[in-house]
Length: 186
Image 1 (cartoon, rainbow, N blue to C red):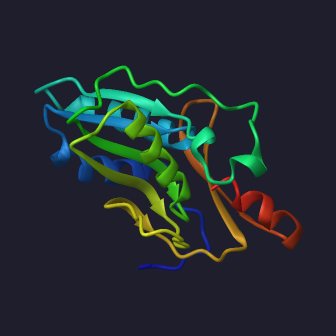
Image 2: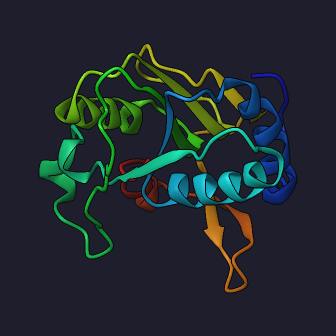
């Protein structure tokens, strides 16, 4: 990790950085896929920023809720905030840009890739995340991030969407009693 922070990063600034890094990757056969819920918020904000600068083609997009594909589903169960995945385009031979908010262990990404392959065989998958907070447990990591941030296992960085649509982060210190419950959600 490249930096250690005790302050909360500015999500809107990070979105601008991520949009600049994402723009050169977009081609005619590219589609964006956001992982519920934070990755979808990031994707929607990125699309709004990219639409201002792109004139060549429309960007296809979809959403994934990976709840059923997680390796801890038996422990977590079905949550009331689960939403159906929506992939309204043919995944076959498409260059997929998979979008998440905060990358941690890699387990959510693994679940998302498993679900994507149920829709077809993409030509490629590129993972982008607003923040890579460290703590990878699988040989998966984002190719593009706006911020590399070292956090202790006892800290939880979570993206939130405010009533006005703007994104922000909360950073919570976990106690031993709630640490296990929160880590299962990442």
